[in-house]
Length: 384
Image (cartoon, rainbow, N blue to C red; front, top):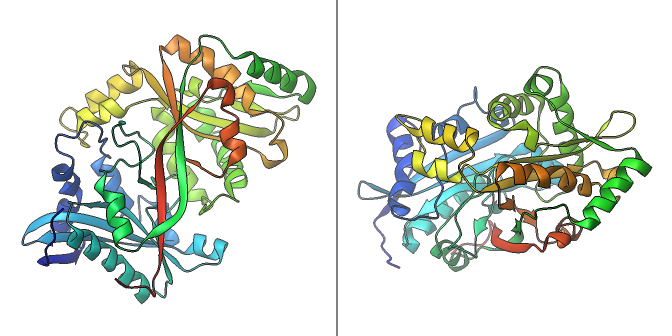
């Protein structure tokens, strides 16, 4: 680690500073085989009110750290007014943080968001967190040798060390779950799935893109997510406009046979699992850019399923159906499909470490808990 005092922080306010913001990770992760870049167009759209409906109720400010004229770090401050009202807090979140191994850089970045938050009347710093729970969140604190994923950040090993040195403390941890996909559905899941079908009247269905986007079923899915995730740490309910944005952006990219929906005997939606074949390798080859050849690498990952694993992005069950073994229906449906697709293993998105019910459901699949990631916090009255 090096330390220096010749660091300046500039807010992102024009095309040049946005270009520097986008390029910061390139130098940090050059030659790092585990790093999976974001699409640069997605990052640009994050700051565009016409592209990001979350800005209707959130304030954001990006900063770049420079040493002389070289961009050596970046960060985004976020104030989600809806989440603050929901949880009765005054939090400023930080997100998209990247920095070289120089404590002066990370200190200056955190201080910039602290100051910006204080100016808006905030009392606590929290992150990494995005506007919504579907944005990437949490800083990796273990398993830096494992390749990143679509749904979560990868960062280098020195990142959490900097957070601790700057006085930030643990607020919450998430874990990812890895499983080897069995050739057959485990007997316990098969029995419970049969019980759910015969005794509770549940069934698994698949939907078309038209039904999800134009037919209104997609909004039912997100209404379920809002209901199921409402008590979860930091969750911010999605607006109608945000739901439309998610549906139009992501449904065309996903193989819908990998998304089981569970209906009850009244045709009400009571559960959904969103999974997809991994595209991490395609994103690495694309280097975050669609042109000139990024589109081709992504097409191969999405359509030809050139990767050997799947990402289980989320599972949600309506609260009044939780605890009845509904999740067994997901496994009963997906395991045969995964085998036909040639997937050998699967990894979930981040799961809160204290969500015992969620974590225990994986036991018949002999899960491995990996990639612990952390949300840090700091009271803004505390300075270093």
